[in-house]
Image (cartoon, rainbow, N blue to C red; front, top):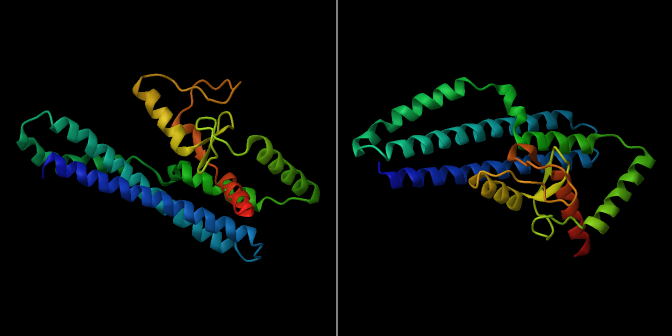
Length: 225
Protein backbone atom coordinates (compact mmCIF):
# COMPACT_ATOMS: atom_id res chain seq x y z
CA UNK A 1 0.00 0.00 0.00
CA UNK A 2 1.33 3.44 -0.95
CA UNK A 3 1.22 6.59 1.17
CA UNK A 4 -1.48 8.02 -1.10
CA UNK A 5 -3.62 4.91 -0.54
CA UNK A 6 -3.21 5.28 3.22
CA UNK A 7 -4.36 8.90 3.03
CA UNK A 8 -7.35 7.93 0.88
CA UNK A 9 -8.33 5.27 3.42
CA UNK A 10 -8.04 7.79 6.26
CA UNK A 11 -10.22 10.23 4.36
CA UNK A 12 -12.86 7.55 3.98
CA UNK A 13 -12.70 6.76 7.68
CA UNK A 14 -13.12 10.42 8.61
CA UNK A 15 -16.18 10.52 6.37
CA UNK A 16 -17.60 7.53 8.26
CA UNK A 17 -17.00 9.41 11.52
CA UNK A 18 -19.07 12.30 10.23
CA UNK A 19 -21.89 9.86 9.45
CA UNK A 20 -21.69 8.44 12.98
CA UNK A 21 -21.89 11.97 14.40
CA UNK A 22 -24.95 12.70 12.28
CA UNK A 23 -26.54 9.46 13.48
CA UNK A 24 -25.93 10.48 17.11
CA UNK A 25 -27.65 13.83 16.50
CA UNK A 26 -30.61 11.97 15.00
CA UNK A 27 -30.85 9.70 18.05
CA UNK A 28 -30.94 12.76 20.30
CA UNK A 29 -33.65 14.36 18.16
CA UNK A 30 -35.75 11.20 18.38
CA UNK A 31 -35.33 11.10 22.16
CA UNK A 32 -36.34 14.75 22.55
CA UNK A 33 -39.32 14.26 20.22
CA UNK A 34 -40.37 11.32 22.37
CA UNK A 35 -40.20 13.36 25.56
CA UNK A 36 -41.99 16.35 24.04
CA UNK A 37 -44.80 14.09 22.82
CA UNK A 38 -45.69 13.52 26.52
CA UNK A 39 -45.98 9.79 26.04
CA UNK A 40 -46.48 8.13 29.42
CA UNK A 41 -44.48 5.01 28.57
CA UNK A 42 -41.18 6.25 27.19
CA UNK A 43 -38.56 5.35 29.81
CA UNK A 44 -37.61 2.04 28.20
CA UNK A 45 -37.37 3.69 24.77
CA UNK A 46 -35.12 6.42 26.18
CA UNK A 47 -32.91 3.77 27.77
CA UNK A 48 -32.64 2.03 24.39
CA UNK A 49 -31.76 5.30 22.65
CA UNK A 50 -29.14 6.09 25.27
CA UNK A 51 -27.60 2.64 24.84
CA UNK A 52 -27.52 3.23 21.08
CA UNK A 53 -25.83 6.61 21.42
CA UNK A 54 -23.24 5.13 23.77
CA UNK A 55 -22.51 2.43 21.19
CA UNK A 56 -22.11 5.13 18.56
CA UNK A 57 -19.80 7.07 20.87
CA UNK A 58 -17.66 3.97 21.32
CA UNK A 59 -17.48 3.47 17.56
CA UNK A 60 -16.55 7.12 17.06
CA UNK A 61 -13.85 6.82 19.71
CA UNK A 62 -12.40 3.72 18.08
CA UNK A 63 -12.32 5.31 14.63
CA UNK A 64 -10.79 8.50 15.98
CA UNK A 65 -8.12 6.57 17.88
CA UNK A 66 -7.33 4.41 14.86
CA UNK A 67 -7.08 7.42 12.54
CA UNK A 68 -4.79 9.32 14.90
CA UNK A 69 -2.46 6.34 15.27
CA UNK A 70 -2.29 5.75 11.51
CA UNK A 71 -1.63 9.45 10.82
CA UNK A 72 1.12 9.58 13.44
CA UNK A 73 2.86 6.39 12.28
CA UNK A 74 2.40 7.30 8.64
CA UNK A 75 4.27 10.55 9.20
CA UNK A 76 7.07 8.62 10.90
CA UNK A 77 7.31 5.96 8.21
CA UNK A 78 7.30 8.57 5.43
CA UNK A 79 10.75 9.66 6.60
CA UNK A 80 12.09 6.10 6.37
CA UNK A 81 12.93 3.79 3.42
CA UNK A 82 9.87 2.50 1.48
CA UNK A 83 10.17 -0.98 2.96
CA UNK A 84 9.32 0.49 6.38
CA UNK A 85 5.74 0.81 5.16
CA UNK A 86 5.36 -2.97 5.33
CA UNK A 87 5.56 -2.84 9.14
CA UNK A 88 2.90 -0.13 9.39
CA UNK A 89 -0.03 -2.52 9.73
CA UNK A 90 1.51 -4.46 12.64
CA UNK A 91 2.52 -1.27 14.44
CA UNK A 92 -0.95 0.23 14.03
CA UNK A 93 -2.58 -2.94 15.37
CA UNK A 94 -0.24 -3.06 18.36
CA UNK A 95 -0.74 0.57 19.33
CA UNK A 96 -4.48 0.47 18.70
CA UNK A 97 -5.01 -2.57 20.91
CA UNK A 98 -2.89 -1.01 23.66
CA UNK A 99 -4.84 2.23 23.50
CA UNK A 100 -8.23 0.51 23.54
CA UNK A 101 -7.20 -1.56 26.55
CA UNK A 102 -6.41 1.63 28.45
CA UNK A 103 -9.87 3.15 27.90
CA UNK A 104 -13.00 2.46 29.91
CA UNK A 105 -16.69 2.34 29.08
CA UNK A 106 -17.33 5.01 31.72
CA UNK A 107 -15.31 7.52 29.69
CA UNK A 108 -17.86 7.31 26.90
CA UNK A 109 -20.18 9.43 29.03
CA UNK A 110 -17.73 12.32 28.50
CA UNK A 111 -18.21 12.20 24.72
CA UNK A 112 -19.59 15.61 23.72
CA UNK A 113 -22.58 14.17 21.88
CA UNK A 114 -23.44 11.89 24.79
CA UNK A 115 -23.36 14.95 27.06
CA UNK A 116 -25.58 16.79 24.56
CA UNK A 117 -28.01 13.84 24.57
CA UNK A 118 -28.27 13.83 28.35
CA UNK A 119 -28.58 17.60 28.64
CA UNK A 120 -31.15 17.83 25.86
CA UNK A 121 -33.31 15.00 27.16
CA UNK A 122 -32.85 16.18 30.75
CA UNK A 123 -34.06 19.67 29.87
CA UNK A 124 -37.07 18.28 28.05
CA UNK A 125 -37.92 15.94 30.94
CA UNK A 126 -37.52 18.56 33.65
CA UNK A 127 -40.99 19.28 35.08
CA UNK A 128 -42.24 22.85 34.94
CA UNK A 129 -45.14 24.51 36.67
CA UNK A 130 -47.16 27.18 34.90
CA UNK A 131 -44.97 30.04 36.10
CA UNK A 132 -41.74 28.28 35.12
CA UNK A 133 -43.10 27.52 31.65
CA UNK A 134 -44.16 31.14 31.23
CA UNK A 135 -40.74 32.37 32.34
CA UNK A 136 -39.05 29.95 29.95
CA UNK A 137 -41.19 31.21 27.06
CA UNK A 138 -40.29 34.77 28.00
CA UNK A 139 -36.60 33.86 28.08
CA UNK A 140 -36.88 32.34 24.61
CA UNK A 141 -38.68 35.43 23.34
CA UNK A 142 -35.96 37.67 24.76
CA UNK A 143 -33.30 35.49 23.19
CA UNK A 144 -35.04 35.60 19.83
CA UNK A 145 -35.53 39.34 20.00
CA UNK A 146 -32.16 40.53 21.21
CA UNK A 147 -29.68 37.77 20.40
CA UNK A 148 -31.48 36.45 17.33
CA UNK A 149 -29.48 33.25 17.60
CA UNK A 150 -26.50 35.01 16.02
CA UNK A 151 -23.01 33.52 16.18
CA UNK A 152 -20.55 36.10 17.58
CA UNK A 153 -17.96 34.93 15.06
CA UNK A 154 -19.93 34.83 11.82
CA UNK A 155 -22.60 37.40 12.75
CA UNK A 156 -25.20 35.17 11.11
CA UNK A 157 -27.76 32.81 12.58
CA UNK A 158 -26.29 29.62 14.02
CA UNK A 159 -27.09 26.30 12.35
CA UNK A 160 -25.29 24.03 14.81
CA UNK A 161 -24.91 25.94 18.10
CA UNK A 162 -22.16 24.84 20.46
CA UNK A 163 -22.31 25.80 24.12
CA UNK A 164 -19.15 26.74 26.02
CA UNK A 165 -19.36 24.94 29.39
CA UNK A 166 -16.97 27.47 30.95
CA UNK A 167 -18.67 30.78 30.10
CA UNK A 168 -22.03 29.50 28.75
CA UNK A 169 -21.70 31.40 25.47
CA UNK A 170 -22.75 29.94 22.14
CA UNK A 171 -21.06 29.80 18.73
CA UNK A 172 -21.76 28.04 15.44
CA UNK A 173 -19.87 24.75 15.32
CA UNK A 174 -17.97 25.27 12.08
CA UNK A 175 -16.84 28.78 12.97
CA UNK A 176 -15.65 28.07 16.51
CA UNK A 177 -13.78 24.87 15.60
CA UNK A 178 -12.07 26.60 12.69
CA UNK A 179 -10.92 29.47 14.92
CA UNK A 180 -9.63 27.14 17.64
CA UNK A 181 -7.72 25.13 15.03
CA UNK A 182 -6.23 28.29 13.49
CA UNK A 183 -5.07 29.59 16.87
CA UNK A 184 -3.68 26.17 17.77
CA UNK A 185 -1.52 26.19 14.64
CA UNK A 186 -0.22 29.60 15.70
CA UNK A 187 0.43 28.24 19.22
CA UNK A 188 -1.94 30.85 20.63
CA UNK A 189 -4.93 30.74 22.94
CA UNK A 190 -8.36 31.66 21.64
CA UNK A 191 -10.38 34.21 23.64
CA UNK A 192 -14.16 33.95 23.73
CA UNK A 193 -15.39 36.41 21.07
CA UNK A 194 -18.38 37.58 23.13
CA UNK A 195 -17.78 41.18 24.17
CA UNK A 196 -16.93 41.47 27.86
CA UNK A 197 -16.31 37.75 28.39
CA UNK A 198 -13.27 36.99 30.54
CA UNK A 199 -12.71 33.50 29.14
CA UNK A 200 -9.31 33.81 27.48
CA UNK A 201 -8.76 30.16 26.54
CA UNK A 202 -11.60 28.48 24.69
CA UNK A 203 -10.79 24.85 23.84
CA UNK A 204 -12.68 22.20 21.91
CA UNK A 205 -13.03 20.20 25.12
CA UNK A 206 -15.10 23.05 26.57
CA UNK A 207 -17.73 22.79 23.84
CA UNK A 208 -20.86 20.65 23.66
CA UNK A 209 -23.63 20.73 21.04
CA UNK A 210 -26.70 22.59 22.31
CA UNK A 211 -29.40 20.58 20.57
CA UNK A 212 -32.18 22.22 22.56
CA UNK A 213 -31.17 25.64 21.22
CA UNK A 214 -30.84 24.16 17.73
CA UNK A 215 -34.42 22.89 17.94
CA UNK A 216 -35.61 26.32 19.08
CA UNK A 217 -33.91 27.95 16.10
CA UNK A 218 -35.45 25.41 13.74
CA UNK A 219 -38.92 25.84 15.24
CA UNK A 220 -38.66 29.62 15.07
CA UNK A 221 -37.63 29.44 11.43
CA UNK A 222 -40.39 26.96 10.61
CA UNK A 223 -42.99 29.26 12.18
CA UNK A 224 -41.83 32.12 9.95
CA UNK A 225 -42.23 30.20 6.71
